[in-house]
Length: 337
Ligand code: NAI
Ligand code: MG
Image (tube, rainbow, N blue to C red; front, top):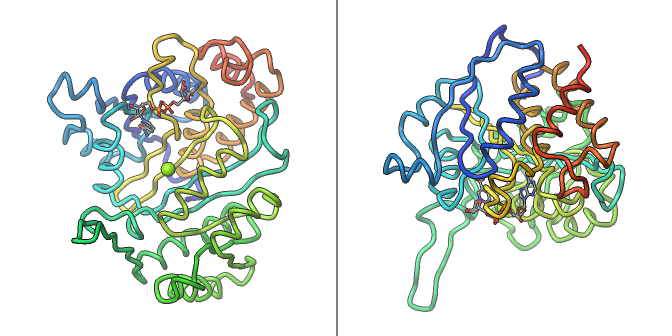
């Protein structure tokens, strides 16, 4: 991510999508608007409603807008999620999937001092379309590890650590069994690590990591890993800190960057103004950091933290009775100007 402010004005593609996507987006933009930054929001459609209305879940204008904007804020899609969000990631070659895992007060984390980032390779590994097929015996999937993609993601992780004052990067693999593919990952990991002498580098097997995340999560700073392992470990991370309403993510690539909560359109609570907007807000904060707007990001995050400290001001999923927009107003009132 960038660390210095790059522009005075930003164009943001805003794709609220379906269900609570629209509600949490409204809440996040309400707070963004109170920050001292010039944003030009350009709204675009995608998702189930868009499919019904326009015959496609992801119009090409939406893709073009994302490509031509400084960043994209995405709410959630419904049943069309695979055709929307997975396609955007592929089309925009968003190779890095970032999922922060952080414990906040009043949210029932397993520990109070968890704060690490999972940097997951998003373009290869076991998840490539077309690399899975039926055979006479059953089915087979090929797991692709290329030097180029792994070096790019590992370097991204070290750069992220350097720019965000993280002291250590942990490479996660299974090189004892997958000697060639993950052997290569491990080799590249230490090659890249040697270019960052100030950052500690260590590597663990993925199964051991799954355990250490439970027993000593405070020892992790930045984890970098391949596609499938990153998918699994990031959900384990979400479980560590508890609650879909709190987990943001970023997809960063050569042709664009998109910031979205991990949750979906939540049809069970949609339209009731009770969705927790914090995951969307934390995604917007990741966007601010990506744009180099670190001061605004810190201001926004501190305001959320103040609200989290008062259990009465939270939404139903966190045991409170506030509405989506009541929580947003509290956050806005806690910004310092
Ligand atoms: P979901 O994340 O929408 O909801 C799971 C549960 O968590 C529900 O009980 C919901 O009420 C609750 N929840 C989620 N976000 C919340 C929030 N911000 N505040 C309070 N409670 C929250 O996942 P589910 O139910 O599996 O999928 C619903 C729809 O969303 C499906 O159509 C699915 O395809 C889509 N989806 C889209 C994603 C995306 O656009 N990136 C990701 C995951 C699911
Ligand atoms: Mg997953």
